[in-house]
Image (cartoon, rainbow, N blue to C red):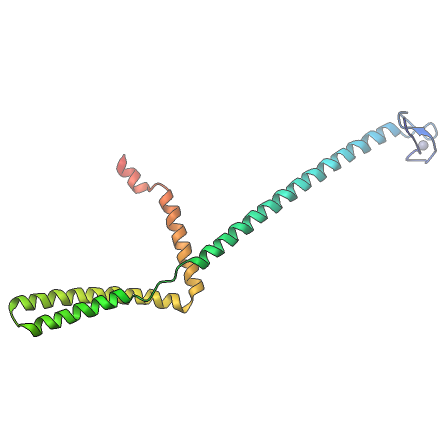
Length: 171
Ligand SMILES: [Zn+2]
């Protein structure tokens, strides 16, 4: 049993177990019960708020870690190298085509020259294609790395999902 002042009239020594104030008949018990309920609700609200805040902080931390990992992986994305092998292949095939004709001008040499020229053109096409990619990467390495990374991730994601076309074929 505690002694308090009546919350309405301020009369002293009203017992908090008494239903109403003997001085002004204010329902002190109801008032105290309501106050206790309100305080309990407020405490619960604060606990929930703290839990929600902690959850949000953890999520933000996880998101930040994933973002850091993504940045690191983008940074480590390899840039394309200058396509030397294709250029060398084209030159060798072209030289062979010419040498074949210089050695002898028989039908078989003409055939070899044609085949070598065909191979040389093929190498050259691959060289130009890779050179274009190489130049794009050199122009803006950061952007190129990010695009390459995103493309790689999309490929990974798509390969995880079952392909609807092949599924239909199975049925
Ligand atoms: Zn009172």
